[in-house]
Length: 140
Image 1 (cartoon, rainbow, N blue to C red):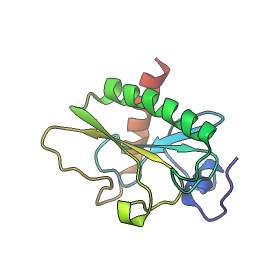
Image 2 (image 1 turned 90 degrees about the vertical axis):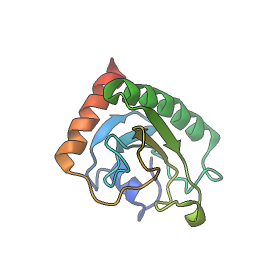
Image 3 (image 1 turned 120 degrees about the vertical axis):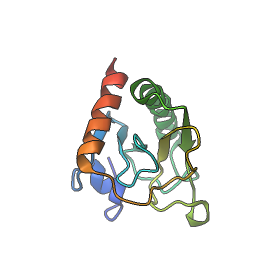
Image 4 (image 1 turned 180 degrees about the vertical axis):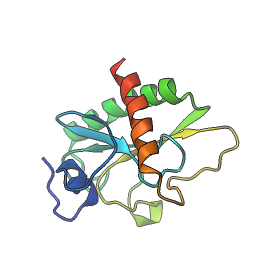
């Protein structure tokens, strides 16, 4: 389903790069950010490659938006954050670093600094644990 050979997210979709997956369906893949801005930082991507909002097909955008809402509700239930940032960037000037359309879901606690990307890689076991918690809430 994915079309860009060098895109890191397309490689995750194809199973060439491991990821702590939360959910997968025919159109979307949800997984934990490896350099999270906060615990539970989750990414939602369409399986079909599109660099940004201006390039994504309407059907893929609608499918991605629907699953973003479901995952947001699951994060709220599983992790009980004080708030949830939902971020989507387009182009380097906006902070986009992976050029495959994606949406960040970032659980926030009162007083936490705002940011889209963390400063250090996360522990893989923590990512798997967080993914399992969100997945259980999503399936509930």
